[in-house]
Image (cartoon, rainbow, N blue to C red; front, side, top):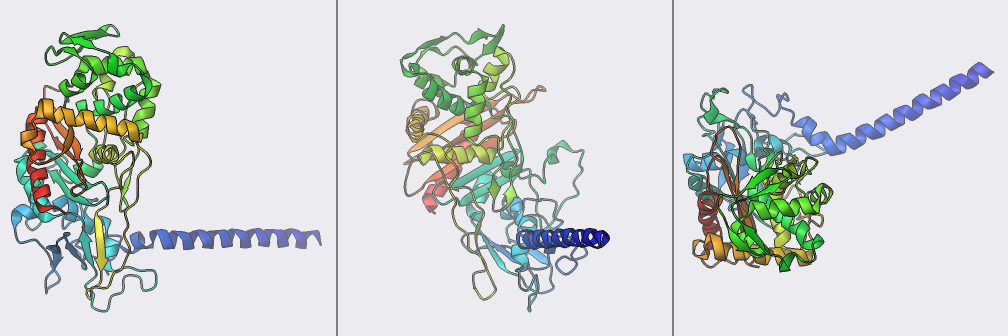
Length: 457
């Protein structure tokens, strides 16, 4: 009798485990079924050369960026410059660019759904409309002028990414033979806006300023005298030149390393880490399922190392899109719409196949602090960068020149936002080894923002 009871209990345990396993499988099937079906080895969806057989990719204006011809071969936009400018948004034929739509959104392009899987009577797949504008991407690509880097512009109210360019790039209609040892092709398959970390340099001073505004009550009554260098923690923190007597607004406009290095040490490593985390710079975000890279910051060193970390140097690295989101939050009272790339998906008959909404970020900054910093960033433009470079724009910005070591020219950054209900755009520009942030990256931003404002999305 006891044997029968034991066997009965054992059978019940097996049945329970089977039930749990079935529930887990069903959950995974609902959540991940599209990824399973669109796996590159699925010959129903992919050709022997690895090209997705179905689906058409269009920009926000309905311009076809990639589709299939009558022979089932994948084609791209007619203009080669536009093809290069939209490469990292669309993807390459071989699927090497993991963040490109052909790979990241293969399930949506194929027409996958829970009821019929990837079966389509016509075998043509769905239409996928991206939020980007091919025209604006081309402006950004031309503005980079062959330099490596990235340009991002997004609407911080709706989350729509209007511009997403990453270089180096190539023509997907005529892919070159890429030598992995050739430095000119370094990171060619990486979307630098979404998936690459870089040293932020002085654009990070906005985070240090955020912490100082909220933790140092006398901040706006203080003054500093910059002589070009200051000793912190037994070593020197240098500026490009002596800035002279300054208050905190001048210190931001002059991007004084000495002032912000001293502030970081006074605030302490724990506070600096707290505000960096709160700004969202150390966490990955998801752009319609594409997971961005995580930033890494180290505020645990000695005072001199902490000072350099507070000005965006040392071991600091971050993903550009996270800073762009933070800029959107400053512009929008502490929260901003999370960036997104999919405008809509439809069948060949124009019927919608999914619903895509704007989602707000967590609170990244206090609303009152955001207003204060926005005014100071606008002062940067008036006093340092030149308002005439941004005609008709109520622009708030911060430049950055990030030392990368190895005797290389510094990276150039320019980030910020427009305070305009009609054009609520946040932006970021990185020009690798470009030199001056305002002069180089700021010029790229000027061209792209001028085009964006003129078109008015």
